[in-house]
Amino acid sequence: MKFAACRKKEAEIIKKILKKSVVFLLAIVMAFGLVPANKNLAFALNNGQSTLSATAESIENQIYDKLETQKLAMKIAIFSQPITIKVSDDVINIVVYVNITGSAADLEIEGTTYRQAAIDGIIDNWGGEKDGIYVNIIVIDIFDNPIMNLNQRSLNIEIREKTGISQLTQWRSPRNLGNIILYQGDFRCTILGAEHRYNLIEFKRVSAHEFGHALGIGDTLRMDVVTIMGPLVWITTASRLDIELAIKANKFERWQRFEDNLNLIRLHGKSWWWLE
Ligand SMILES: [Zn+2]
Figure 1 (cartoon, rainbow, N blue to C red):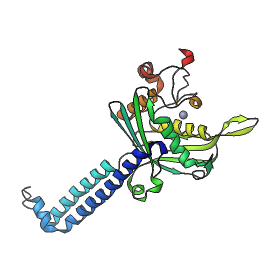
Figure 2: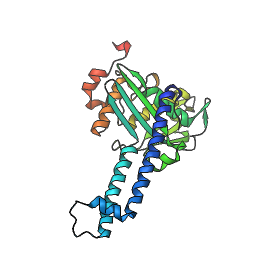
Figure 3: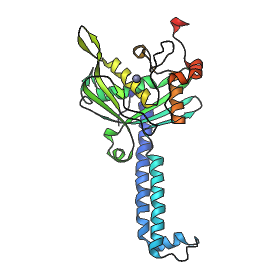
Figure 4: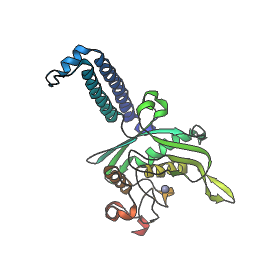
């Protein structure tokens, strides 16, 4: 697992809890897996359920169905969707599982890797104090955890070794996020004919912007609100407004467009100081 240094303490605790939950879950699943083999126990479990004509085989099937349902329920409960948002008063907890691939993922950028830069970009820009609320964000790279790799749904981030237009493939719901594709630069921005390659700060901002799409937020061309989803992505970070839009997208499982959220913009879309 990879965590940003700034949230290291919390990250360590969550890491421990997650490891314990995985071991606990495996123990339960293994224990349930043994039950159908024990017919006496199977009869005992079904006693009093008035299945008078039940044969040993049918009881075993019924119990098997029940156990499969329970196993599935546990799977959903513990190995949940790629991004979980929990709101409690003025603290927003966001847990993100990422699966980072691509030819540039383990290449170096200013002393770190693109893989780590993509994670840090999400944490640096979306975490921390946001105008009256605190966002606690934990990004877990399933790359380092083979147990989770099998079960945990994750946000796929592909980092390509070339320039291009970074994007999120089609978002459908918080369970079906699409994939983030990041490039090392953008060929639309040229300086004296040379394609622009992102520096570390720019790459992290692009990662954070695309993560905003993964949270279910659309782009905006508005220059009068502070948002990481707008044309001024280079000089701002995710704002309270962005967080509110993410919470709404998660709650209603719907893509949030800026033009449909004028009330939220009025409430939280703090304007730029030079326009005030
Ligand atoms: Zn965008």
